[in-house]
Image 1 (cartoon, helix red, strand yellow):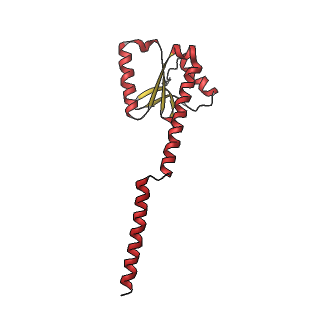
Image 2 (cartoon, rainbow, N blue to C red; image 1 turned 90 degrees about the vertical axis):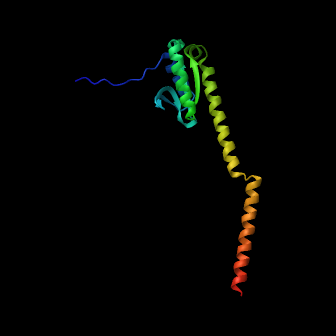
Image 3 (cartoon, rainbow, N blue to C red; image 1 turned 135 degrees about the horizontal axis):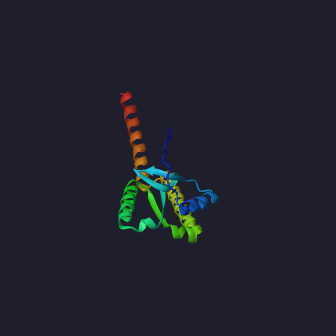
Length: 148
């Protein structure tokens, strides 16, 4: 008995882009299912999806499917980046740089969030001061009722 297995298709351009990403030590997965759609390249750490569009993406029907796919992925919180085969073949390094820029932008946002979480804002400081005064008043009230 012969068993057929699903093998996701990888275009030459997708393979080339994957090689360039590996050379830059950028971690990614290929041909992953996300939100019911197969994506070409996925950088899970950054919620980044990279699609490499061949000539078949020029048809109206395929463009409609691509739009639905992109809308669904964006609604789920993924950032979607699209390149054509031509872009990858003619300017692959530029495509990789664009991916790296998004990764760096993501890292910067994470640092800003971490900094914001450790830096108390004005209202947080006032709330902390208020709670400290309230605890002191409650302690004073408790001590004065014990003394009676």
